[in-house]
Amino acid sequence: MNPTASPVSLTRYLIEEQREGRIGPNLRLLIEVVARACKSISIQVGKGALGGVLGDAGSGGEASINVQGEAQKKLDVLSNEILLEANAWGGHLAALASEEMDHCVAIPDEYPRGKYLLLFDPLDGSSNIDVNISVGTIFSVLRCPEDVETVGDEHFLQPGTAQVAAGYCTYGPSTMLVLTIGNGTHAFTLDREIGSFVMTTRGMRIPEETREFAVNMSNQRFWEEPMQQYVGDLLAGKEGPRGKDFNMRWVASMVADVHRILTRGGIFSYPLDSKCAPKGGKLRLMYEANPMAFLVEQAGGAASTGRQRMLDVRPTGLHQRVPVFLGSKNEVEAAVRYHAEHDAQARAVA
Ligand code: AHG
Ligand code: MN
Ligand code: MN
Image (tube, rainbow, N blue to C red; front, side, top):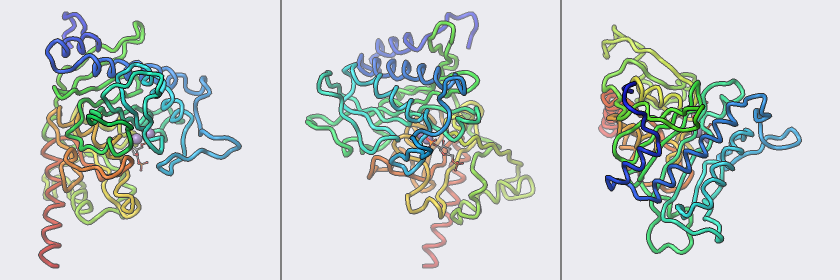
């Protein structure tokens, strides 16, 4: 950021994009409302143990389980409620869908209905809440198909290329909102004193080359063969076929790992493994993979399932899971090559 230029708030950025005809007033309102909800979540997360918000949700010592089959944290539930409440009454949405809810929810009849659909992972990386490590919120915005009377889950099943906006908010040492409306990826830092998001990076660019990868190595023995070969070659370093040493980082909060990659490059992967294969992968296409893929592509990076561009995947279910490779373009392409070569060999043998 140029310290002499006057700061550009999120509001100003959105108004200028509206003036340029890149967004309409309803999408602008939607993004402002999501940003406001993220500020509330940031306040709750920041209270930590003092706010009574740590630990599992549920009662009688039993953690409540969400539609994903995962134990919910109190902050998962609270963040979901904050986003639902903030987005109910503005007139910009037709319906919302969340990682924490079985099905989408339509906007209550008492409020005007808008033309957008909002999807979110209200709190990503929630295994990190109780140990005071960064967590985040991820969101994706789609258009509601025309002439739909009753919005259902099926109306959300649009490929990532149909997203009109996507972003995440990371609750770390500072709270940052990273946003795309299809015209670059921009970062805004929360100025806690004035309560406003201020642009700190216009047009984030992911370096095409990298020496850093992010993966949960404890799953190595469960991975598919091409992933074993790919990471094996990364670990072989200078002496191996890749001819350079690689560093590894894994926060276990996708938001934090992707934020690092958007800032300084790298490849993030949650590949298919024999534990998550029956579900199609670990990470969720609609709430995690697609919004991150949109942000990463808009910053000059790439995102793939290993076998297909992420944004081209035709969703079949709201809670669908997929393998994920995203980040520095050349490195994602290298990982994809390992899959393509492996599959070609397997076809030749068959
Ligand atoms: P969530 O907390 O929304 O369920 O997402 C957790 C995800 C993602 O943030 C992270 O990259 C990954 O799960 C971590 O998985 P492991 O615990 O298997 O490392
Ligand atoms: Mn998540
Ligand atoms: Mn989550």
